[in-house]
Length: 388
Image 1 (tube, helix red, strand yellow):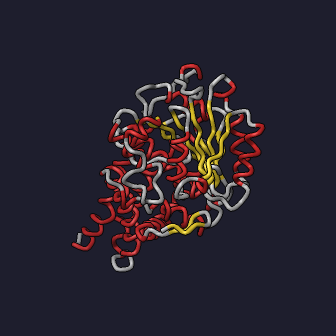
Image 2: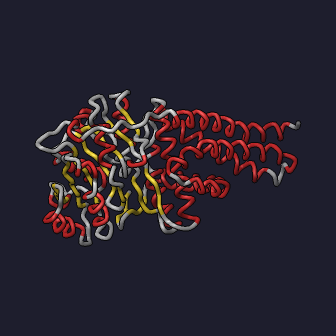
Image 3: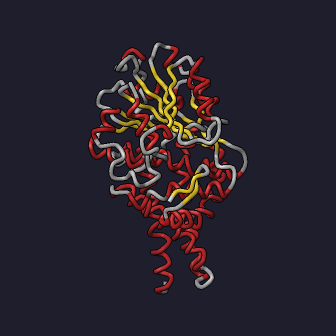
């Protein structure tokens, strides 16, 4: 074998093999995640009459909020005697979001309050400011967060209440499923399912890396113990993962994942490629600010594995005899993804999405590079607001 071919093999097969080993480990951790133990509503500690506070940050969500509020009114936890309040935080909306909340509060079957950032001192903006304001206003010891454009199943609050009943628990991450029709939605769905699965596996391994702010909960006292978003408040994104990392550092055994179908939160996939890239750039903008080693290592490994495959294809123009090495690397990477995603997509009941995996793998290297580099730049547009 020539030196060039040997270097090619190391460049494409090496990262793919390390990636495959990681996926096998993550798959085992996913499968070993403990089942959720139901907790009757009466077992959850109450404070000022409320056991849970649901927090929803909203900006220009007049079209989506009624659906979420309807879902919350159908929660089995409330029907079984559980107590919860809902706080909607309006982040300077320019539509009818505040009016919809105020009108809904008049006939709501649960305590519903509106907090407007525009009425607070300094008139703060952004998701972190909204969450901070809601946590301060909450009257329950455990807060549950989702987004205004999400849909939740009737057992969603009950699942989070089961974790809240465990007095050693400090934080719970829940599964998020993308919905929509067509290839773009399916590709986004596969990607997010993989992220959810890897995040859950990391929690199972005791090395949390990621979670999703559309479905999580935590103890208010723990939030204040780690000083909330202090240290990363200047980063517009990351209200979920930065807090996860801080809480894990303070409470290594207090982090949980809700591997429970009733806990799945559904939200729509981005309708266009441009909207998708804007969202992913927003997500990527926080990676450079990670302080923990586990998420940094994982991000580098995923990037190297995908870029290595793409570079291997390009190298065939100069080293056509290297095609067996490139093919082997692609097979190792794809096989590892299939091995990992089979049980994860089975949990979501989306096994047919596996057929999109080769397409996603072809597109992932330029896609990851583009979003990563744009994320490093730090600026993006979100919900009609330019973020620097």
